[in-house]
Image (cartoon, rainbow, N blue to C red; front, top):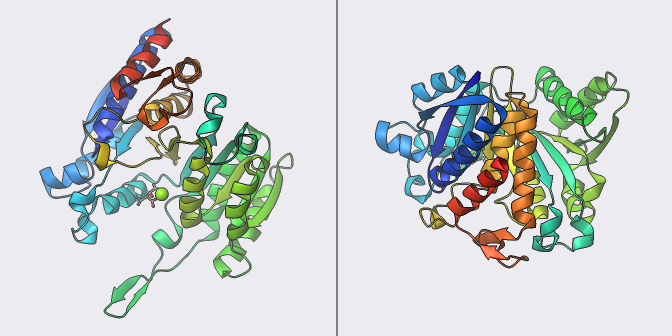
Length: 355
Ligand code: IPM
Ligand code: MG
């Protein structure tokens, strides 16, 4: 029997609750599809700081690199907001991405038919939306030098090298080949030198994918187009900070930030996590929506472990739970037949896999 080693990082806030539900569903699907999963629990974020004094202990890096994939909950919370920057959970997260070399962040935004009314946009605008934001994750203004601050000035630098752009562009074109074969590259080439290099380089890479249609858009226009007519997009390729902003915007098309998964991949390992944060305000109440995390587990099976049948089963079970009217609190007003807790939702989805 095939066996996979999964690094589990539960993190802070609702992280532990939602990861537990993903594990429940993973275990159900593993039995069904004839493989086994071994979990290695690792510390990160505020809880890691509280226990070890470091938001990203060395063990977490080595343990992750040793696994076949990483399933990640969420980190951070007000409790740690006033720590010096390098001790904060967010700094741990950025270091984690860098150490693991996960340069490509894939953030799909899909609208479930069952939930077209949950979006703040009109149903006819969002019905059928299925796009993928491909965000560069370990470069750009998040990491560029020089950076710093003194009493009266703060500065960061947006830097991309040709190599960094080439590798993320390949990811976007490869993903487009499995989808609708359209890439829209998003930049600010009318103002930024770094974006001019970005645009030229993406054009070069595109020559290797003659079947894919490439277009370019300025980021301000892209922000507008995402709301005006999101169905025009298939793959949106962009840098770190623009992708951070646009992926939050895109997530709202689906109505709840509690639904969407993400993957961060590189040459060595992939990290699979919900796109939402640790939501400390609702932690421990059993009301968080575990679907984004369960869906991230499905992405992990598909992209990291090549267990496509298992991933399909999870996706179908999620759809079925929504279709039958099961809703967590966040979606209570949208055609709910039954409101369920975090763990009830996990069990319902796990049960649909077994049947
Ligand atoms: C994200 C988050 C992070 C980011 C923060 C928490 C550092 O917003 O994953 O999108 O900006 O990348
Ligand atoms: Mg973000």
